[in-house]
Amino acid sequence: MSPQSTENSLSRSMGPMGAMATVVAGTLGAGLFVTLGTASSTTGPSVILVVAISGLLAMAIATNYSWIATIFPGAAGSYTYISRTFDSRLPGFVVTWSKWLGYMAACATLAIGFGTYLNVFYPGVDATVAGFVLLTVLFLVNLVGTKGYSVSQNVIFGFLILSILVLVIPGLFSIDAANYQPFFTGGFDGFVAAAVPLFYAYIGIAVAAQMGAEVKNPGRNLPLAMVGGTAVLIVLYMLTAAVIYGVVGDYTVLANSDRPLATAAEVFLGDVGTGIVAFGGLLATASSVHAVMAAGIKMPYSWSWDRVFPQFFSSVSSRFRTPHWSLLTLWGVSSFLTFWSGGLEGALAIATFSYLIAYFTVSITAGWVYARRADIASRAAFQPGAWFYVSVVVAVVGSGGLLTQAANWTALFTGEFGALSTLAIYVPWLAVGLVVFAVYWYLGDRAGTDVGAILDTLPGVPSDEWDPNIRETDPDPSDDPTPSPGAGD
Image (cartoon, rainbow, N blue to C red; front, side):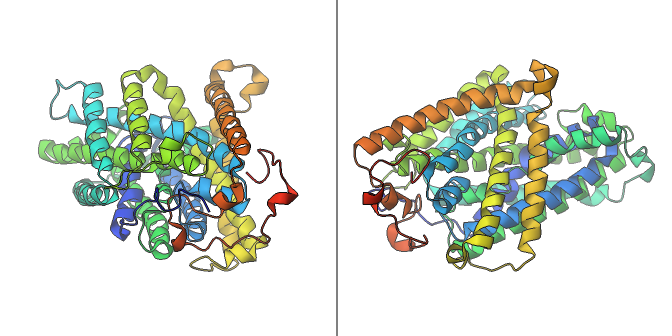
């Protein structure tokens, strides 16, 4: 048993609405208020169709995550699922190391987006400074624990949905079908090119999985949050896309706008309606930063729990049960990236790329568990039936295809180095992570760390909450006195 399993555990204090708000309000920021307009630059009004297809892929991924999350309701989502399924810390670490950088970059970008929407009301405000202030306020809110996060996120969620309905409901009666023509403006290539940025609109569908150790009744509430939240997102995106492209005569106006929803609102709502939608943009970006910050601190916390990262990252405050050092690190790096905006573009490329890696690998893991590990699968809160294989195949093929698009592997053969921005950052960053892992594995091996006992726990979950007896056989430490980083770690 890990000595951290009780004293450093997290508090299960997040209810179903908090988990749902984490998925929906935590995803809407960039997706609804920015990407839904700007992605049309390559494909025009057919963005509406791309949103629908991306939504089917998102629902498949959410289904896979929600099923395996009920088996391993611990912190850090994909890291926990992969490491506990394959009884090794290394593959989960590889999958989530770059995702951590992506979370910090996303916090910075969304914070700057908050400042941009604030300019609608206060034109003289510096977007960067406003973003830094937002990061600091939300840092303090997250510092006092999950309950404070849930209450504030639920309030933001309610006002956010209201501001979106102010645009959508009257907008449905102001649509001119002629504005949808031509529907496809960039052919097949333009349609596919819009798929990656529009899938980013769904990128937070599994963010609740990062907080699995803090959600009450996870067997019910995690699937409800991820599958139900994704369904809500699909409906909101489809309705909003139909409205903004139906009321604006020239789609390029939306493609070139930093605030496309506010731009569309100007056409038929006037200043008051535009102000309400812009306020929704403030709420959406703030809620996204809030959710990403709360989720992003769970990865270093879980690596530390598993002894492959500095131990202080899994320390929690005695009063609020918050991993404060992990939170402080995320706030510091995100604040730095906010002021060093030149470094954001590459880091954001890593965000999408690393999310897709996680979705691809977790979907494969869920399919393998369902097909080959009945001893583990039997512990799920629900048994989906044979149709689950359809969800797995759709998620693996779809996320794999988008992963290829996001990485732009073809540039390896064309020599266009500029197109390799994602890989140029991903590969060195991954190399750094492998060095970190190797150092802490070596130190743990020298200290005689019982890796099997660690893997018998769930990050963030007290040992008496979870039965770790899921493996086909219990490893005998005497059979492998010198384990390697790739096996049994």
